[in-house]
Structure formats: structure tokens, C-alpha cells
Amino acid sequence: MPKRIAPLTPSQVQNAKPQSKPYKLRDGGGLFLLVNADAAKLWRWDYRRPATGRQNTIGFGAFPAVKLAEARERVRRARELLAAGIDPGEQRKAEKVATVERAANTFAALAEEWWAAKREKEIVAGTAKRERRLLETYLLPYIGDMPVEDITVHALLAALRKPEADGKVETAHRARSLAGQVFRYGKVIGRTERNPAADLVGALKTPKGQHFASVTAPNEIGPLLRALYGYEGSAVVAAALKLGPLVFVRPGELRTARWADIDLDAAEWRYTASKTNTPHVVPLAVQAVEILRELQPLTGRREYVFPSARGKGRPMSDVAMTAAMRRMGIDGDTMTAHGFRAMARTVLDEVLGYRPDYIEHQLAHAVRDPNGRAYNRTAHLPERRKMMQGWADYLDGLRNGTNVVSIRRSA
Image (tube, rainbow, N blue to C red):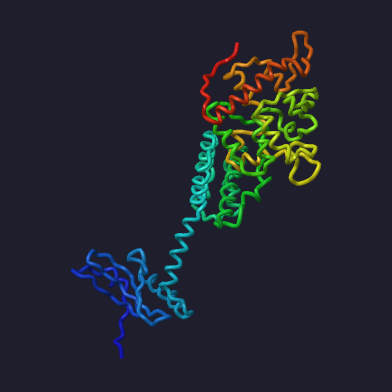
């Protein structure tokens, strides 16, 4: 009959001294304290694997972090697993793997992976800087360490309430949008099934109206155009994204453009400007005509140049171009569909030196003559035609990286 082992006492554990070689102080039931030569005191437990009957040893922590009573409690829980036919050692390995996987699937880890994938595509410099700041300031400090699957709508909303409470309502909306991009990426690669950001639409305060963001620096226009030309979605939206910078009309006028108003042979688009309700002429550069000719076989038999994908007889959605830019990582602080007008107005004047009245006419603004009368739609049309072709050529140069123009103002 095996000799019965007297249980350890707390004082024995406390007073155990190191020796030249490691030794064991047994507590019974397979639990023992391993006292190493370096004075470390480690709890160990011997048991037999349920599948093979072979002996195995697992650790239960170190003294004094784990006291004698806690070591015994850990043995008790391990014995419950054995009674259920579960190997405590294998269970621990599985838990460690799950912990590692859980740590690798935090919002911060997913955001970094999304960021790396996003950076493989060209991002406008201003957008990249703002998105990084949004992540590091308004999202990662609050939900960064949380596993993606554990982030609830309420947890994300609590993070977004912080900038909102500081009066940064627009920032809160941008942070929600950015979080949504990360969660959508996680869904695509199979790391999560949920997107709590989508459930928060309408939950934040409505931001006050602001100016339309636009890229006006030549060194940022090139990357923007390359991103637009790299759009891989609908052919209709892709054509609108390419044409928008060339004609810089109001977004509503672009999406509702009718084939009946466009004469490709004359390279002109004539319609009634929406804001001033006056006739307007848009001279079409060679590049613009080429885009429209490529689109014509697809939509030429319909009323609208850019028809809706969701129903016949309707133009493209008013958010289609914006949504496409957001999917490409161009945020609302960098560029909007309306921002092409500000881009053209600024660069045509300050960089290319065209006369301001030519530019204002082309923007369909209500320009008056010295007697207070509005110019007609054909005012300066030959000059505007040259300007529109020069603008298109300039944009091609920026997109292809061949333009180097110093900034200057026209007299």
C-alpha cells in the first residue's frame, strides 16, 4: 500500500529553501512544489492522460503569486476535466492557441492589416494622414485591444461619443466611417461576421454644413487621378469618375447628363445649369469625348449618360461617385464629387493662369458684364474651348507624372 503523503502547510511552502539541486515538496494527489536552485518555487501537478494512461505533468504557476490554496483549487478544476474525459494538458494548449488567435484578431491588429492592404493601392497623402490620425486618436485607444468579435455597437458608440462630446461631430462621423471600412475588410477576409459601425448610422449628431473638400495642390492631384482611373467597379461610375475632373460641372448635372444634350462630333455638351437656370455650354476636350465614346455602346440607347444600375429611366444615384471614392480610401475631408469644381477653379487660375472670367463662365456662375447684364452662354466660347483642352492635357500630365508647373497667378 503506497505511503500516504502529509499535505503541505503554508509555512512549509513559505520557508522552503533552495538547495544545490531542484527538489520536490509533495502535497498529495499529484500536486507538488518544485523548489529550484535559483529559489524559484513552481507548482506542478502529475496526472495520467485519459486517452493513453501515460503520466503527464503540467504547471500551475509560481509561489508566492499562486498560494497553496489556489494551487489546490486549480488541481480540483483539472480533476473535473479528467472526470469528463478531457485531458487538462491538451485543454490548456487549446486555450493558449485560442488566446494567441484572439490577440491576433483585435481591432488594432485588423486595422493594421487593413491599412497594409490599403497602402498597396495608391492613397492621396492627405487622406492617409487623416485616416492614421483618426485611428490612433479616436479608435485604437478605446477599442484597439478588444477582439473584433467582442466589439459591440455600444462599445463603438462609446468611443465615438468622445469626439462628439467635444463638439467634433464631423470627426465622430469620419471615425465611424473608418471603423466601418476596417470591419468590412474583416468580413471579406473571414475574420468577423459583424460590422457594428453599420448599425450606428443615424446614432450620432448631424454635423453642420461645411465647405466641399477638394484637392488643389498639383502634387496631390496626380495620385488622386491615378486612384480614380484605377477604380474597378461599375463601368458607368468609372466613366463618371474620369469625366468629373475634366468637365467640373455640378455633381447633379453630371449624373443627370442626357445623351440628347451631347454632340460628340462638335465636342460640346449643352444643357441648362441647375443653379442659375440658364443655358450653359461645356466644350469637351479630346479626352472627354474619348471617355464618352467608350461609354456610348453601353448606355447610348438610354436617356441618361450615367443611368442607374437599380432601375430603368433613372440617372445614377447622387451618392454613387462619393461611395466609389470612399471605397478607394478617398475620405470626405480630402475630396468630394463637388470638389472637382474647386480643384479646377484654383488650378486654372493660380497654376495655369487662365483669366478668371473664363473660369467663372465655365463654372456656370452668374458673371455680369460692366452694365450688369449676364453674359450669354457662348461668351468667350473659343477661349474656353482652348482652356478646357489645356486643362485636360494638364491633368493627363499630372496623372502620368510628366507635368512640372510652378504656381503663378494671372494678372
